[in-house]
Length: 236
Image (cartoon, rainbow, N blue to C red; front, top):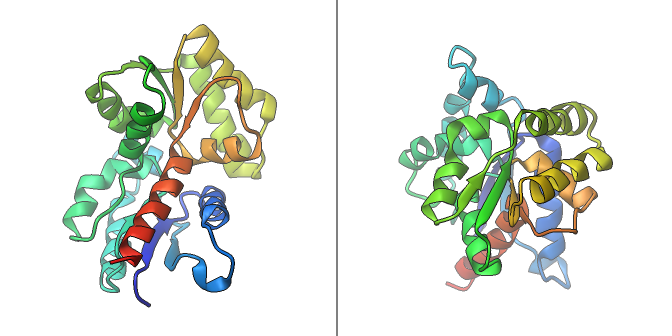
């Protein structure tokens, strides 16, 4: 297969499924041959990223992820995508394992803000506690010149409930809870935009869209960037 990319997914599987659905839905195709070539690695048994980031005595996701990237690199994809925000904690180590480009989801999300919300100054972030602890988004947002707004304990607990008790455990989205989280970030924390820094939150946005204020959906942005890059390589 020529000109394909590899998706290292399964963290979690329902969120990866949303990424794939959006990817295929947005690809301009009128027949089978016009869709994109890709390989999906749905590695569902990768240890929990947040558990490890918060407690390094827990099993590390890095060894299985390194194995995935090395195995897939031997097939020579044009590039990799990693539709799990928290897994970007290991981004630098993963890039050392291969010279094939790996799209950086948090970086692409922050770029999108600059391109599409030029008046934004205060950027909120909702995510797993692991993503908050690894500061991947913090650095990208601050380096781009924005004021970072993090949720208080109440909003973080609500976010944890939505991610783990709803999406991961039940594959369901509590619309009222999701919209209340965002309402608080926009109306009480005075954010100009809020980054969905977890793919389970992107799944929630896909199923129960919040449209009152501009949301920065990192996974949706990754989908568009994936299509853009795949087309570029296909033309070479």
